[in-house]
Image 1 (cartoon, rainbow, N blue to C red):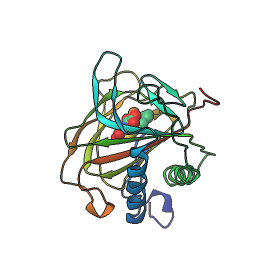
Image 2 (cartoon, rainbow, N blue to C red; image 1 turned 90 degrees about the vertical axis):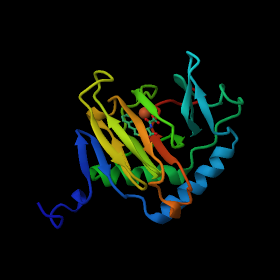
Image 3 (cartoon, helix red, strand yellow; image 1 turned 45 degrees about the horizontal axis):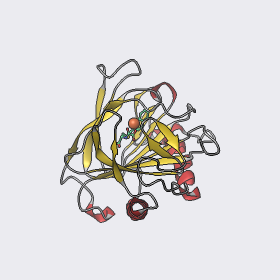
Image 4 (cartoon, rainbow, N blue to C red; image 1 turned 135 degrees about the vertical axis):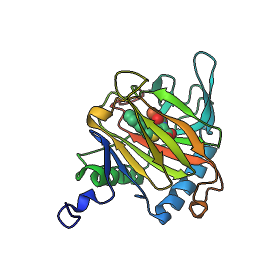
Length: 221
Ligand code: MD3
Ligand code: FE
C-alpha cells in the first residue's frame, strides 16, 4: 500500500499488537526542549536518583518523576524514598505531547490524559532488567520518548520474562507507544550504545527516556 492512501503508515512499525514504533518522531527542536526540561526536573524539588530496590539492589538507571513519584512498587505524591518533597507537577504541555504521540501511533488519541512521567537517564553502563509496569490502575497506553545514545530495547510477552521477545534498536527522537495487549508485556533495556547519540539535542553522553502514563489514581494516592 502506498503512503498516499495510508499516510499514517509512514515510518510506523507495529512490533506487536498495540506496540507501535515511530522512528525519529521528535523534531530536533523538541529533542532540545525536552533535554532542557529534563535538566531542570533533575535538579528538584526531588533530585534525580538511583532507585533502591527492597532487596537492597540499586538500579543503574537514574530516575526523576513528574505528577506522581514512582517508588518500588507504588506511586506517591511525595518522594518518600528520596527527600520527602512533593513531586513536581505534570505540565499541561507534556500531556498535549502525549496525546499527539498516541495519535501519531494509532491514528487517534483516544482521549489520552497522562498524569505521570518517569524520566530515566542511562549512562553507558546502565541497564534495565525485564519487568512489567503494573502499578498503574489504568490500561491506557504508555508513551516512550528516547533522546541521546541508542539502545537495545527488548520487548517480551505478558506471560513471563523469557522468550519470545523482539529486540528493537531505539535511537534519539524515537517514539514508542505500548497499548492494548502490549501494555502489560515484560520489557527491558539490555544495553546502551555509547557515542551513538545526538549532540545537537544538547546531551553530550548517555540516553534519556521519558515515559508518560495514566496512573488511574486520584488525590494523594
Ligand atoms: C512496555 N523504561 O520506565 S521505555 C520504564 O527505556 C521503562 O527507560 C524503559 O521500562 C526505558 O518502566 C523502556 C519503553 C516502555 C516503557 C513502559 C512500558 C515499554 C513498555 C510499559 C508497558 C509495556
Ligand atoms: Fe517499564
